[in-house]
Each structure stands twice: as C-alpha cells, then as structure tokens.
Image (cartoon, rainbow, N blue to C red; front, side):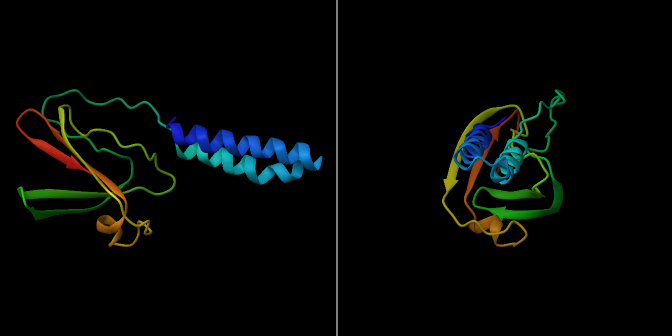
Amino acid sequence: MVRDGYIYGLSLLLVAGLLAWATGNWAWSVAPVLLAAFFLWFFRDPRRTVPAEPGLVVSPGDGVVTETVAISTPDGPRQRISIFLSVFNVHVNRSPIAGVLTRVHYQKGEYLNAMNPASADRNEQNAVTVRGEGYEVTFK
C-alpha cells in the first residue's frame, strides 16, 4: 500500500469512530468508512512479476494505451506512448526498464480531468529518465 492510502484511509476510519462515539449513532459512520475503504483500495500496491529478459520495456503503470506517436524533443525524436489510468486502475508507477535514474523533473500544474487532452501538458507531473543498457526511457 502506498503511504497516502494509510493516511487517508486510517484518518477516515478515525473520523468514523469519532462520529459514532459523538452521536451515539453508527449510521453517521457509514460514509467515512466507505471513503476509507475506497482510499485503501485506490492506493493499493500489488506485487508484480516483471520479466527479466534483456532489452524489454514494460508498462510503467496499469491502464489502457490511448496513443502511440513519434514526437520531436530537444533531445531528438522520441516515441510517446500514452496510458490512461481510470479510477479502477492501480495508480502506482514503476520503472519500465532496469537502469540508472539520470533525471527527475517535477512540474507544478493544474488538476485537469485526465480525459482532457491538455492535462498531459498542464497537470502536475514528474518526468523521470532512466538509462538502461544502450537506451534510455523517460516516463511521467
């Protein structure tokens, strides 16, 4: 489980307990308990079996591939693969290759709905570059 899941989930369970105690009516605790269950589920971090063959690139996250396109960057041409994570997907990102972390760039931003194409550029994000054996991958 990701740390945020414990923070939100346990805080809401505490609120549920306080509401039940303060009002003497457990019905007031239903909404915080349901929200706690959602946060504990949303921030889950299941174990993954990652193939160990050389040269493989795996998806950094669960979801649906929505676009794959060649793009130009200051570092040269790149292949961009976009993955949409719905609320039902695991929201933990992992490194798509084995290698050395060479760059992390955090960008403050907005919180646009992920369905909005502008969200890819304008939302808060981390861009991470990993150099593997003979190539590097950047993901955000």
